Image (tube, rainbow, N blue to C red):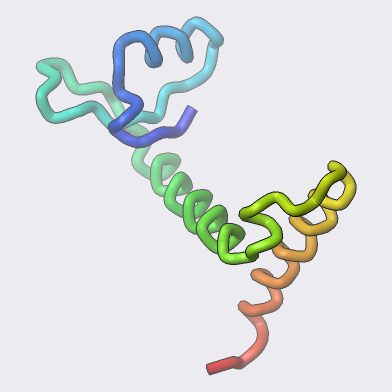
Length: 92
């Protein structure tokens, strides 16, 4: 589980470890024992957050106007394709 420092509680870390998942949460500065952190994996969290931020710019996606799951999935696919296409098109 990758998360930011806001999720650094003993209960959350213990629950994630009990599930058998790896914990990639930076320790808060006031903890006496700092946890090891895979920095390369933690950097991927930023990419995921930026992707969700770009998806929220699509009004239909962010307000969930779609009534059915098929319409929501189609809207999500169109929004992702639009974001991807913007990488290849020169627009000011």
